[in-house]
Length: 134
Image (cartoon, rainbow, N blue to C red; front, side, top):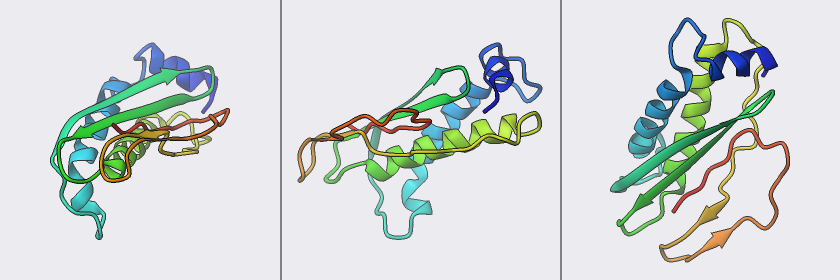
């Protein structure tokens, strides 16, 4: 995104309101609705969902952490949280910046479940979106 867009988000200076607070709520709601949107995903009891943002000069990193005590992982819920949060940022900023892109959505870490712990080997530079699932 343009540097002026990240500055406006950081200063809460957009007409549509607080972009990051809205994106956080949207991401949390999306994590809880993943099974209704993904046809082959089954309902999972979602515990905590955290959606956090890091504002840089020309991008905003979105990170989600989701946990459950259910029988399966919550990777899809974490991916849904990050993606919908990023889409919300785009939606709220698009009137002033049509150059924005959403890139590099990925799982960075997973723990628990049948497959145990998994971590991505190397961090990719320039990441705009990332997800963490616990």
